[in-house]
Image 1 (cartoon, one colour):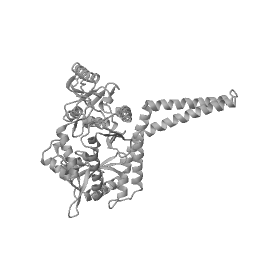
Image 2 (cartoon, one colour):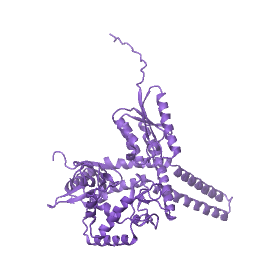
Image 3 (tube, helix red, strand yellow):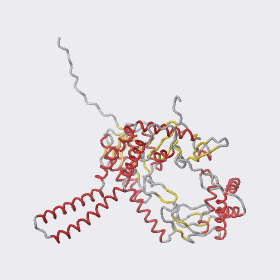
Image 4 (cartoon, helix red, strand yellow):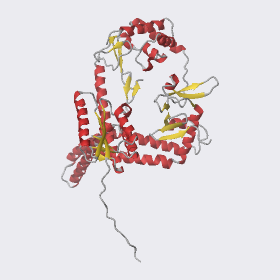
Length: 519
């Protein structure tokens, strides 16, 4: 008996309403940019409200701040928080460069939003992350945006350097004892200058920097630093600051041309410029010189309390970003502690971590990596090589160089054919070949320069070195190996007192418990 089948035709289903938000950002606080900022907010408000099936959640906007660091973008972080709460289905953004100029942060945010079921539409590039296949396109575009940001930073640094070479005073903030009412020139703030003079005289009178800091705290002297607390390192820095004699040492710090842009102390990596009499002095040169000589003598007498270990400067707090420091108690027990937590536990919850547990976590991490190299490291290298190839093909500068090389090579081939056919004499061919060879050498040098500047190539090389180290390393590590640790690990991020994250050379990050469960 045949089955009785009833066909139920499809019926039109009205699509669910999408909850849509927009994100805007401008790069400076100029009048034109602020106008663009306001215009973007109005544009997205109208666009979303007038689109059928879209409900406006909010327009998130960051004004006059950098796009290279996500931790400085309050509304961007608010947008991510609302996405995590399930308030948003789709985000509209003008272009990838407005989203992030850092490839790693860009992809990390996009992947998180994808996991949350939130798609992102980049209008300029016409890319919708609702499909997985667009992620590689985003990688290319965000890499180009990153190169643009590096170029802007380099141009700005060059401008600063030219001004310093001309002896033009440059400062961003006024040190204690001064103000900058016009945003350019330092003037003395007498109430603070009195305290500065007292510090210098107190030090010459035999007081230690610790005693001076304690006295400033006892007197409850106001300062603009967090919590207004005076501490030894701050006093020592002030006593050695040439600003107090009216001079300026420019470029004490410099910004590295790698992402994210990080300020580093200048230990001779870039030029410094000492400019005399740039502003009014608070301290006489005679007093200042006496203090410098005394600082030097006391430093020579003071035994170094820092013991360099494999973990020095490699352990970072995952909560506040401070560098961990080593502490040894009277019984010889060694721990590492977040500097901010050590000064005031309220400021950072990450407490002390035993040194032996950090060493043990590395041993366990290495043994797992040794067993799973083909699962963890090799696929990462392959993905980065594929990304590098795509970026090089999508890099306008690289494309132009490759086209020029191809054109010159074709000319060389054609000349060779003409010579073989007897249509060009030897002298003419030699002259033309020399000209083309010089052109090719120059172009190939330019291509090598572009390749050398590519962070992805550096990361691939670092990852390959990591693979080689693990492959040729011991089959099983039984105890902490200092050489292997220093070669493999870039830093350790302490997420909590029970969990750390090892960042290996090349960017791979692996979590490890400080105490294995069940042991």
